[in-house]
Amino acid sequence: MAKTDWKAEAKTLKKKLRKLKSQVTDAVSEVAEEVREEVAEVAGKIGVKLKQAKPVSPLAPKDGFPKLPLIKGVEFSAAEAGIKYANRKDVMLIRLAPGTAVAGVFTRSSTRSGCVRDCQEKLAAKVPPGAGAAIIVNSGNSNAFTGKLGDEAVAAVTGGVAAALDLPASRVFSSSTGVIGEPLPHEKITAVLPDLVATLRDDAIEMAAHAMMTTDTFPKGASATIEGEGGPIHIAGIAKGSGMIAPDMATMLVYIFTDAKTTPAALQKMLSRNVDATFNSITVDSDTSTSDTLLLAATGQSAAAPLKGAVAKAFEAALHGVMQDLALQVIRDGEGATKLVEVHVTGAATDADAAKAAFAIANSPLVKTAVAGQDPNWGRIVAAIGKSGAQADRDRLTIRFGDVVVAKNGWRNPAYREEDGAEHFRKDEILIRVDMGLGRASRRVWTCDLTSRYIEINADYRS
Image (tube, rainbow, N blue to C red; front, side, top):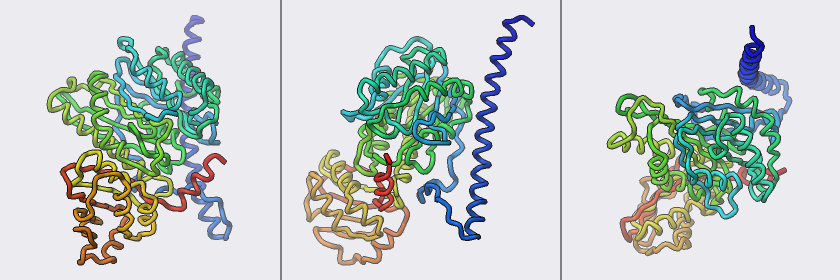
């Protein structure tokens, strides 16, 4: 066999070995989890107290991470870089096939991270014909408020990925999430790039979702499939988010993929049209992150014809559904959350007023703690509306908990019973409805309750 053939064979074997190593690591992790459960059971029987693992949100999907469709032209991998967390995957890589269209929305924070600014610049630039793309994400460090060092870290990471995947640097997008103000040890990320590249596969999206978690208690995924002209069109997305949630564009870190055939401009329009009613309508704590990023990628590898007409409308509706699902999963995983709360304001004079009133209620610590305590204190909702800045008339307000009319015509509803309100507040999902009685504008927003667990998580976050 020629010398060059031996080199090629050795390279192939190394690649297979790295992939096998990743598969073995995943299998060992599953066995370790089973062993931990058995040890905990035995410890309980003999009275030994073990350190408790991070509790999973009681609002988490009961069936765990959903089975998502494979998106042709998208591959995932994850690795342990040791940026902040020990013995867990904290970096993930996504490779997108040549010809993929990419769109994005980002935080409008004036202190946004270097990663965000870099992504914005790259999406605004001209795309090389037929170019592929990649996304690399790390958890544990947000690379925000790190000045020139932060920009150098972004360049080092995206440049390393570009070289490893033979891509233009302008087509490598990065995201970082975690502690603000600490330099990103980018050399730890570039050190694991060989393993990340060697273990890319199309069925590893759940592993990628795990790798970008910080205070999240469960990975988040959602999908949809529609019938196109000539074949099915698939959508699959993953999200990361639990605290510092009051998006001003999209939310936290979200990556959505589809095999639809479309243009970057059309993709961007659909994304921008649907972001306000989904990701921009959730709040955990009224704080907007410096790193919020949502990237939407279309590989164009479905057998279906390019999006147009009724199929395009159906696709956009399905995309909206995936975005809404992911957004609500973020709220279900709000730090310390035990209740999912929908605030629905109707009858406002303007759209802006509807939003002001809805978010004033959703962000009120007094309302959120009342929900946590299952106390139907509707006076706190009245107070939140009054401070919101929205046009309001006491004598036209109507407040409901679900279908229970609590107050109307400027006064407590004579038929309202406190036990009816309390019964509604005992549910896992609570609906607060307010009609302003002034116009036709409305807004729905979603939040969660505020518990002592939120304080514990955030008091210990850096230490």
